[in-house]
Length: 337
Image (tube, rainbow, N blue to C red; front, side):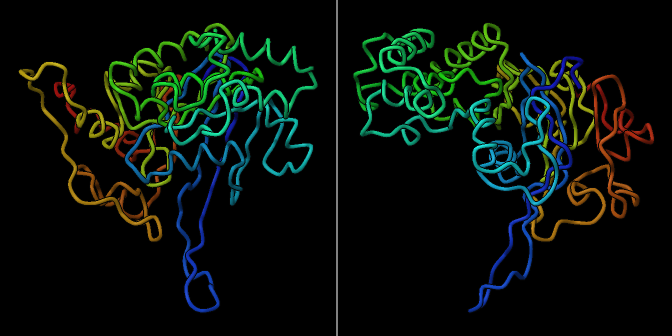
């Protein structure tokens, strides 16, 4: 983990959704969407959460925001345990964590002007007067690359990239310490994605923001991330600094995920780790390592004993019996990187 004091600490976080059936809507099973996730994020740091669709990435973000309640575990924001806070106590901490949503077309109220959209958080959390609030909104809009007069426009008058800048301005208005960005550029044109990512990086450097950046796009992650957490079927299987993960992933799933990304040069060739089969159901996950049903290197221990996420080098964590036994490097040849 980072040496700086963490803005966010998540410890053994779980979220199990009940499966209800029958006339009486009784719970007959549990969807283990998030099952024992732990990580920390320091000020000025971006932790990227990556994995296949349905692995639990977005659920983690919603849990940290307290959009949904955790089944168990702890969430500390600025050193305060917010897991069980309610009412005014939670409201006081909610301003410190804001979100940038995936779809800039659906996340903005079309009936409100840009100034009202950005000013709403200030109205909710601050006691500043109307003229002071308007000045603050104008300053925030200009900081994200929009003119002050844009506050009188409606969302339909902006392009997709401008709408996402508007969403970033709304998140930035109340000076949060943590921003959760859930696929914030996936709905944008490729030509606009880099501009929005660079804006987020500039804002982070200026305001020392912590980011939990949720994405499936490894190219985006490689550009913006400091550390990467790889999720599979509700659990984190590897956490590593960005450069180390892309140079030599230690978990077989991490390598398969990186190998699935296209190379910029279509003439380039490389050995790839191919995984077969489908992701098991989160209602009935396999025993032991949850990846063993698709892992080409699985041994008998993988099928019966759940691997723990352990630190194998400074700042690097992996949940793999092969790595614990010192065998992964031999099974996953570095020549394929």
